[in-house]
Image (cartoon, rainbow, N blue to C red; front, side, top):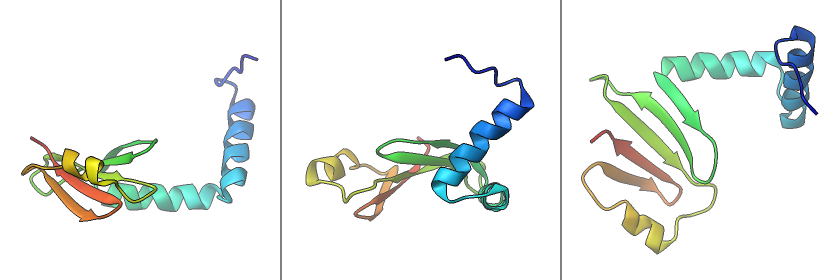
Length: 97
């Protein structure tokens, strides 16, 4: 089924359906957007792991790599290096190279 997302009503219905399935509303999205803007968020990549991209005080690109489940030892080894900091068993901070 092809959906014409240029149609505002169709787009609103799809977005409302997504928000409802998450238990969110338009205010939730507005608050999330404001918080991401304050954190200089420049992008989000969904998946396992999820990645949140932002700019630090020097305007260099950095990222939070967020795992849903604790990282295995082999995954932790992938983050050896100066550009990585393992903050917890589910969170890695990466500075741009």
